Image (cartoon, rainbow, N blue to C red):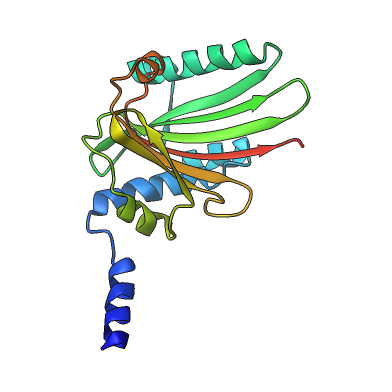
Amino acid sequence: MAFLSIMAAAAAATAPVPLTEDRALFAAFKGVCIKVRSMDAMARAARRGKWHAVEPDAHPNLKLLVEQGRKAGLKEEPSATFTGAQFHKTVAGRELWMVQSRYRDSEGYWSNGCRIYHFDAPAALPGEALAVLMGKPWTGTLPLPDDQVKYLWEPGWKSGHSVEVSYITGTDPVSQKFGLKGQVLMAQAIGGF
């Protein structure tokens, strides 16, 4: 009997996520953001994945994210350089926005980011579903406003980068200032050490 219980628990832990929309969202995220160590590789993956380049003013939240993020970064490090691009795509009926960014400080330290925003997401993806979609359990969590949680994977899909997934209600002052709202999926890599 114990063997059957263990087998049932293992099957439940690896059971497929029932919502194909969530799988499509993660496939779109991973298809580009797994290349986060290279801005050129991310741009090529975005084109292959049929993402369309857009200007930040294509969506009010996107505009705030880009403008306020750059402003905050320059306040901390006035000599830093910022490069990046923004993209749009509809996946399984979800309007998604992607921001690819690179920050480099005066000493040569850099950070690349690849973020997917679903500003209209009605609710957070459950942690258990996220673990199945990522293919492994999260390595940590961080609390967010309004009793929300950010799930962390360090390393992410492979060594050298991290993945974070969170849901933000967008009602707190910081989220409103930066245009943060809805489902956020992020991969990040750092270097120059």
